[in-house]
Length: 164
Ligand code: MG
Image: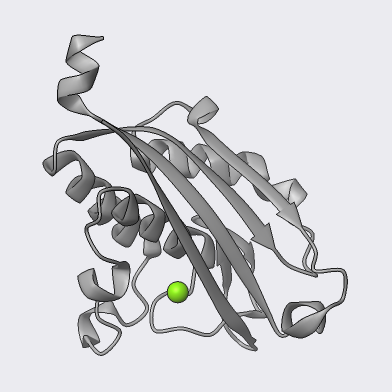
């Protein structure tokens, strides 16, 4: 079986916090608000992974009310989602991500994000797509109030892989 999942996340800016996207520190300040490190990219991606196997969402895996997740590195969340996928009998084929931000410029950081995500998911970098776009100054993101991310993930049942 070949299955696809989708994920979405958005966080608002909060001064005095680090900006972390795709597991990479982009800026020491002007980060995003959140219980964890507020990495919207990894949150959207973890939801896409879980969604592909119909395993719920990251709010279910890591409840925001749980004090243990305060300030947590979202790579931990991503790794947990990937572990759930593997334990459910799937192999990760590829992921694709779109980051929606008016600022800062994302392009200079994409290579580093792909490298981190590929390593965390234990897949080749060719299996990690990342694009960035602005919101053309429309809406909350256009007003530079926050950053959003969309992700899709494709997974393949291990038994199907063995037959191929
Ligand atoms: Mg989030």
